[in-house]
Length: 127
Image: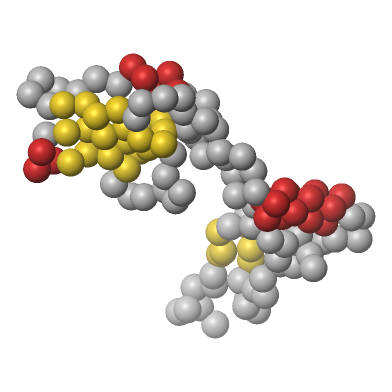
């Protein structure tokens, strides 16, 4: 198995607030019909219409005037890494540390030049 085909390692989810790099421990969702913001434990999966928050932002969240905030009572706990996460991480580190691993580059059509992720193609009108 080469470095490009090694298992995907899930990174720690981070707070969605701009400029905050703290790990997420809570999920914020909005119930627009009820004018309610709900802050609960970190959801299992990141959803498109929800926001991951660190403990500080989860506890300090305020809602617009006329809205209610429903907040999880108790402590927000950071999710523990699973055995699968740790195994995937160990495999990725092991593969990256192998000296004989070289990334397989995609085939480039003849007559084109590859530069980083961009490709320069010859003019189709020139022969």
